[in-house]
Amino acid sequence: MDRMLVVVFDNESKAYEGSRSLQQLDGDGSIAVYAARVVAKNPDGTAVVKEGADTGPLGTLTGTAVGSLVGLLGGPVGVAVGAAGGSLIGAIADLDNVRVGSDFLSDVAETLRPGKVAVVAEVDEEWTTPVDTRMEALGGVVLRRSLWEVEDTQDKQDLASIKADIAQLKTEHAEAKAERKAKLQARIDTLNAKLQEKLDKAKTRLETIRHEADAKVEALKKKAAQSKQDIKVKQEQRMATVKKHYNEWLDRQERRAS
Image 1 (spheres, rainbow, N blue to C red):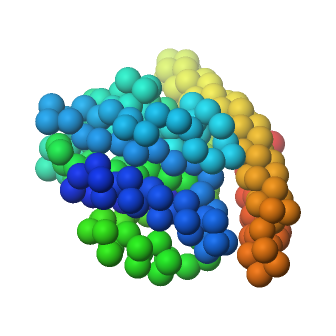
Image 2: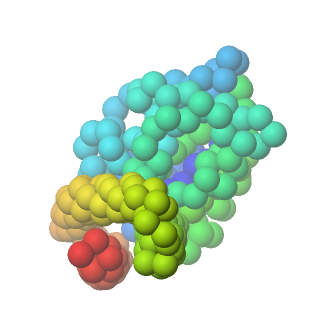
């Protein structure tokens, strides 16, 4: 399961231990870490990346789910997110790249208070116990969200909503008097443009995610080649699952965009 993982700690020392623990779990085949950053929340509510080097097979995190979430937390993208009663404010990044729901973002903003430090990572895990056991032992608060489920559902809902509005307006247009038809047609045109914009954005995102999928599979292949036999088997099984899930997801998105 491809997930966004945010583990919030009381200080940098614990966060670095948490980051190392994730890499150890990656090394023994319990999980796969695709990208990770350590982020600290400043007293003024902004955030700074404490661990500067990109970690994982994705290389630069710009435009990835982790990179976009770091940006929303006030990182390199320069977007400040604050928490007020659990709601996000000041967010201007493209939420499509984050690929998690707004409720998850609110939970992260609420938990990552000033003075706290978080490990933000994209991981693949079959079950949650290995990560939770390690992180909780260090005093970390674990937040996670499936990257497949949320984006797939949100895209489907958004497109269905716009299409329903267009269908309703077309029905009204067919029965409207002449003086009303022009206004209704203008609204239909606006929604059609918005629908096309979403479909175009989805196609662009598909290419990005396809590139990420290839990078992840290649990274797992390299790990398998360098691992002992028992870990190699785990990596090969994960690689097959990742390829299957990505292909199924991409097929659904391509059908929706067509």
